[in-house]
Image (cartoon, rainbow, N blue to C red; front, side, top):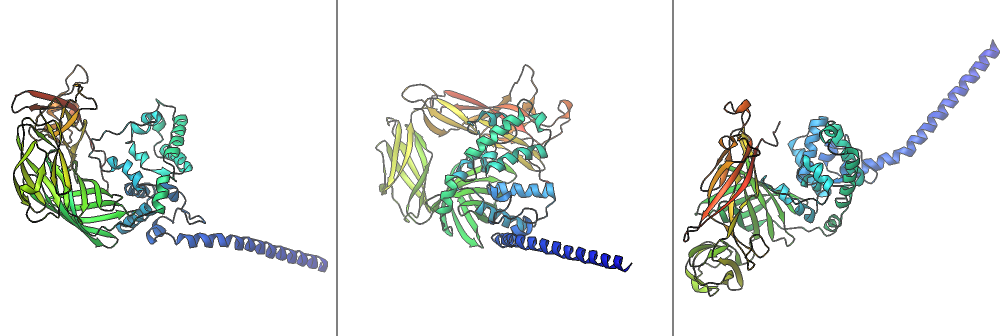
Length: 544
């Protein structure tokens, strides 16, 4: 018995010693792992508090400080906004508006786009919805990606090859039926080829991104700026803006002088992303405007577009000029007809108090009758000789020179946008379309639509709408989709629906043909043009 006790005690001691050894071994392994964890925790400090709080709870930090998944992608501010929305909807992330803004700001700085990359997709970021995208070089993308997305959506992202491949899996995971919806293609095979293509043309590390990071500029935005803008259907306008610093961003006050002499004032916040890309939110005149602008490389000009909140079909293209020099900026209209007297609006900057007509010099075919001045805006009454030469004529003040096209008649018209896209009015949100009739003269070859044709600019046309027939039967869309203003060319969509007056009580969507007719004031000759308008449902409904 004693021997058994002693033997049992010895076995117990051996077990205890083995356990201590094992514990010691695991402790040593943990001690070896500890430095890696410490490094990761230390490197996480490279990121702001909002990212640490909201992103690092799920995304691991690597030893070099990069964040898994997040650091392998570059996006526009809007792209990062979409990512956060997906995290909220798919994974239940809860984030405050303040943290949301901070995350987008930091990710746009560290994983954003270079100016040259942003410019490639500005037409999408600032789109009024009726923009025709450039044709893609890759036919597979045309057949697949563009079936659901604008081409600029994938092209506004830059990813590592691994992340591009994961994007394919993402589509299947979130929309498993996509393989059946896209049954006209070999999904797995063709999707692989597409991501290989995207990994080449939109790789994470690009020359543009490297150059921007290495030579990043600091622009001085605070101060006064002169605005030259253009609204389709309305024309060129001028304005003044003052940007004042507000924390890391700015506050803008602006006054616009619209055609006809009406003034509009707006105020609001301007956020700066990655040092050069601006997003403005301005209110005034019973309207709210959202703007997307880029500071140009010279730091003295800003270009972009604003869209009206609630109706992105109403927009303005604008260029800001740093108000630190004296000069002439632009003139409207861009073309003058022979034998007529025209009122030309010249937008200047820091012009002297009085400018006489003798100080303005023109080509011999132009004669200035009189000048009226309001601030830095000049209204110049000009006679155009009936025997004037076709082509560019000049207006000059000191060393500043502007050009205006002189023409004899209009040969044909085009309607812009080339194809219209409107969205029905639901809950006070709609997308109208502003059509314009652009006049052209044929060049020396006498042929329409060739490279020597000359664009005259917008002409006053009468607008109409007729049925667009896809087949032999008339579906009467023209009676339901909305109306086009006969004088202005603005198409206003109808309310959404359902509409009991339509067959099957469908909504008011449909296709119509928009027509424009220009009548020459002297010869009474009429020129006609037409285009297609698609009126459809909203593409986005906010659930927040």
